[in-house]
Length: 132
Ligand code: AMP
Figure 1 (cartoon, rainbow, N blue to C red):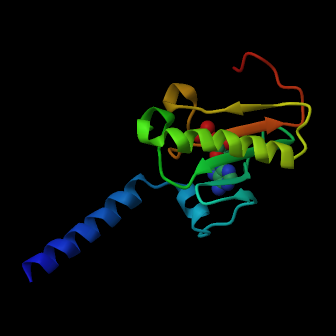
Figure 2 (figure 1 turned 135 degrees about the vertical axis):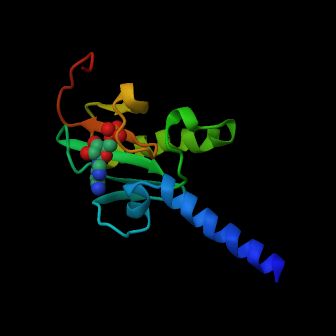
Figure 3 (figure 1 turned 30 degrees about the horizontal axis):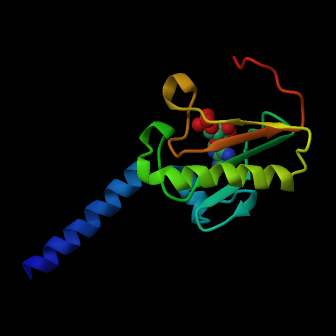
């Protein structure tokens, strides 16, 4: 009985803590809220940004919850590389042959508003540099 109670408590705590760190992007991954999904594989998902800053503005996210690039660990190396290859695939799919920008905002000063790692793909117009 004690083992059963311990197991149940562990399950409940895991659920609570997972939900605490989860963002709206986890709900998009689980199809609990709608998104305009343009690419999906086992490890990643790509969907259109709801507040587009360019004619093409897509977010590429890992299905695994890594809040920020500064939270990634050496074990995430191949996943992080995979995300860039997904960027490449999506950009091709979207016909961004003339170029595009890939942006990762990190933390408050970086302007990150959703704590689930995401790579912005911005294209379809000439972008300025440096960003504000
Ligand atoms: P960042 O400021 O780098 O954290 O980027 C978060 C991005 O997520 C912003 O560009 C938002 O417009 C976008 N965003 C927030 N909620 C949604 C949503 N439900 N569907 C699509 N994009 C979203």
